[in-house]
Amino acid sequence: MIVNRILQLIKYKGINKRKFYIETGLSNGFLDKVKDIGASKIEQILTTYPDINPEWLLTGNGNMTDTIIYDNDLGSKFDQFEELPASYRRIEKQQVPLYNVETSTGISLFEDLNLEPIDYITVPNLPKCDGAIYANTDSMYPLLRGRDIILYKKIANTIDTIFWGEMYIISLTNNDLEEFILLKWIQKSAKGEDWIKLVSENPQHESKDVLFKNIKGLAVIKASIRINPTY
Image (cartoon, rainbow, N blue to C red; front, side, top):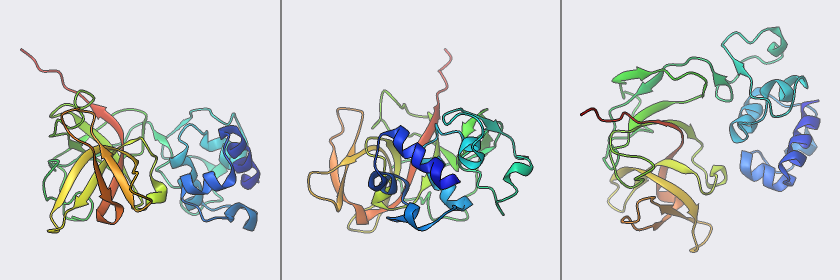
């Protein structure tokens, strides 16, 4: 059963069930209450642990940590699922929409349903991405430079889904309800569980503790593209 393989995954990762629930966002005690697991829960697990081989988790075939690339036709072995979630597969070819959303502006990347892409980007064998924007800020320099393209995957806007120490696109509102799109590392704050610490790579930008309730959207950065200037 898939549940048994999830328990093997937990042992392999060297974590306990509580840590697994926190990292994946699954409810406490979930593994003790079910004998099988649906597609949406599998998506959460494979999004959390992208090194895990989807075929092994679904069927038991192959190695636990193989990186296997599928196209959109996955074959009859996945027929047990009504709808196979795409976000956990490495996709051989996908068109990622590029949006003209500048960081540190009030344009909503997370709520504006009418946001139109200005182009599409194709990079082979990427994890599933929701979109891409230009990194028009020097807060993450030298890791990211102005006009670098960053590709992202939106995640649930809950503090339990955060991978501490990873780089995110963050939608933040201030006291005047202005919205800012930021690129930051997210770390735990010394102010308590209701706070997070936003950290820049550029030492000229100071770290800042913010209340998590002011975060309106989160997206983990999956990849970046740099175009070297031509002289």
